[in-house]
Image 1 (tube, helix red, strand yellow):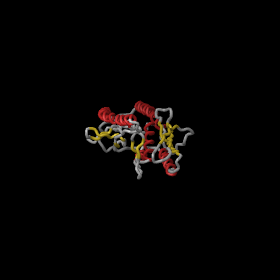
Image 2 (cartoon, rainbow, N blue to C red):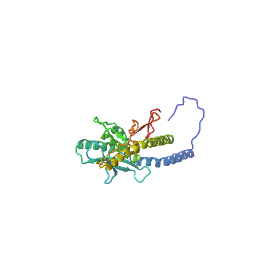
Image 3 (spheres, rainbow, N blue to C red):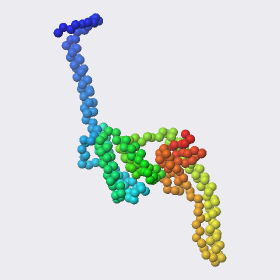
Image 4 (tube, one colour):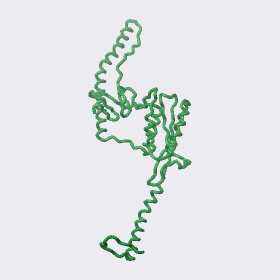
Length: 280
């Protein structure tokens, strides 16, 4: 077959059989080097809806005791382990169940758990369901759970439980505070505790003198043959004596972390949980 050359020839070389053999050996070596990587990549199993449920699944059960319902909710999240025994082992949520003695919310709980289980089995990034659930607000108002954390609704607390579970299996990462921020929060808490201790010592003297007054009146009445009266003295409550987790009872809710840990220090609102400060 004739080939017409329209451009000027600048140089040429003759390909010998040795050159062909050398090029073929280099290509075969490159194919061998790439083949294991491709085979390992192809063998990685990702979560998708066609994966059948194994006979045994591992999971965790969480308890919700909300003032909005009479009986507690027990939330069970079961996980499936993908690529078990390999370096690509993954643990992903597969299904969720909610059980309770209360039948008031039975219909929407069954519907919610079936939809959430379908989302888990669909695969891909399923972490978006946490933000969607935590953004649900009850028109009748939310509540504070143990530790002073505000929950806008029962669905939002369910979302919080799913978030904690995803963090425990490594699907979500909890953003860590910097060393400077942790040191700042520790310093603020120490200052607040020292100030509260001084205030309690100042208020202790008037409270003690007031507590002695009914005792003197009672003994005087008994000495005159009168009737002894049980007198209750109202003393100022210690702000730190209330059961409010590790934060003062007078603390208000922080809009950033939704925790009842916002106190006023040096004329500025400061959160003792996340370090948020209104003054910057």
